[in-house]
Amino acid sequence: MTTLVIGSTGKTGRRIVRRLNDLGTPVRGASRRSTPRFDWQQPSAWPAALQGVTSVYVSYHPDLAAPGAPDTIRAFTTAATRAGVRQLVLLSGRGESNAQRCEQIVRESRLSHTLIRASWFFQNFTEGDLLEPVLAGTVALPAGMVGEPFVDVNDIADVAVAALTGDQHDGRLYELTGPRLLTFAEATAEMSEATGRDIRYAPISLEQFHAALTESVGPDHADLLTGLCREVFDGRNQSLGRGVQEALGREPRDFADFCRTATRTGVWTTA
Image (cartoon, rainbow, N blue to C red):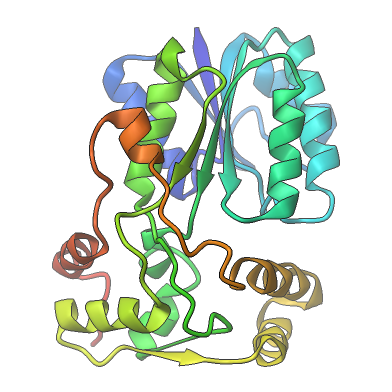
């Protein structure tokens, strides 16, 4: 009863692998550095990764918001069915129309499934692209003063493991958020309070954001991230979900607690 974790070196994937190992559940990590290698752009290699697998945690790179994601997810569900996979747990994005198309494809696959629709991660500030801006003291994003229900990646991992190891989550859609809405200005203020450093949010336009990204990561990735920000920062996500409570029977972790823990690790310490 082996579980395949796609994106096993990513924020959610490596936590899920660790939890499944701790439970004694057979698990196989899949990434572009694994053996067999897994790459979303190389479908010919998928059967080797899926061989002998009964359940799969699906984390799509670069994001389900990418234009070709639905076609790729459809092809993957077909490959998984042919390989004898019984269950998919899909990490989806809250408020993303393309992600919801991918969710529907998984629903229609006839495989047992659980859909995890998550908001922005706390850990984007410690492990993602926002770490460097935090260290520099200014987080610049085209988010205006929209409230975001940031969620802890550890809550996502806990829900995913529960779904991978328990039948009661079959067919469920879980909306995962933290316990409160925070603007990015409020989030950086809480980081400042925890660290004793001056960390600020600078609201910028989508055009400024796109220009900066084009210079640093290239036009294709800039187009993807700018389009994603245009979509999700329009206020559609200014509400709290109850997915953590429904799946785990407890409250989600709070951003202030995350900030204090992150500060103790030294990840936000500057020379």
